[in-house]
Length: 133
Image 1: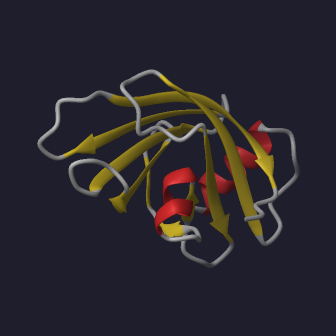
Image 2 (image 1 turned 180 degrees about the horizontal axis):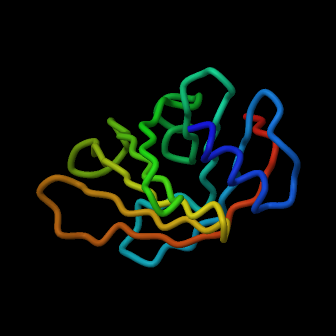
């Protein structure tokens, strides 16, 4: 994960990350909904990577842990699950998967909602930022 943080920091024109790197991504929904317009990825030095968006804010009120897997091509696979999203006829649970390309500061996000054929997709650009709730 340290390589991912360094690559992202270099690609977006900042020096080596301090204690944490927050990437604020503006995401355009290219599917059928359930895509947050802004997603924040946090990479704290020595801590658990976290994610925060409008659905997580509604359900949990604070960032949640995410899994990070670095690929050999320098991209990273980020995964997380959000449960109890307000929906009808019952609350939804969505598993999200993002591919972060630190060299181009782009993110591609997909979501899966069990038993539904909706397309949950988004594309966006990321910039360094400071996370505040």
